[in-house]
Image (cartoon, helix red, strand yellow):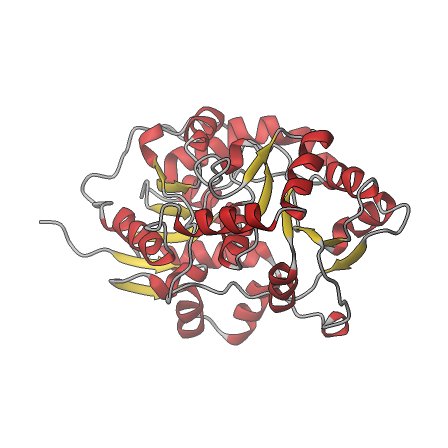
Length: 361
């Protein structure tokens, strides 16, 4: 007999899941004192330890790798418990080291620490592109069957999730533009290529970046032709997307899913998209259907594609109409249903247990 799973859930997905579920926030508030909870909100090591302590009372832990303290929790789980393969990681992304010290130890870390920890603890990981199954299985030595390809939606519906964004009140409504090209993103934006195109074009250009990349963007905006904003709210970002004539989804190749949220949001706003053809958009962007695709770093192709849309209203209308009708079943509701189905199919009696060795010491 298979018992109902007790699930400890974290991340914004929790409000959409069903069953015997309690959120990490609720569990912490009910079982830990105020000081510990506050410390867990500030320090990853504290939250990781508390997650491990809490997890002993649950069959599955559903979270994301980007959650505070989750990486530490995975490692402690692998070392300190006999329970195996009970962590579900949604939107699985390879952790990318930023500091040079971390970059230097990354090969050792992934092979001897993080990889073995995943093999011990992972019940299922959701990936957003098919290629990531092969990539992550090879990188971490995790069997391919532990990955599930559940692509991000292409269309919102009445159950769409608005992901919170920090509001910068000082920037609200400070830019008035018309007939402009827009590019934006917090990470993995090919700013060099789009600025090279913008510098030799007649159309106005709006660039929206994070403070982390502001110095780089300002340096590229050498002739001050572009208007540059940074760290604006989601509401304001949406307003500028709606007002754009063309959206340039210029991204770099990361061999992971990237740009899919920007693509969906722009399609929903009724704005035609020119996008870089990278593996991160495989299964999302279809050339001539919901975007015009150009090779990575190809300045001439990017300029030609943008210009063709900027100066042809009929072509813009055709692409917007086609994009809105492309794969109409790829909605947010159906996406969440696929997530729930994936979790429900993890049976406690059939979880993989192919790794029976301790971590390398």
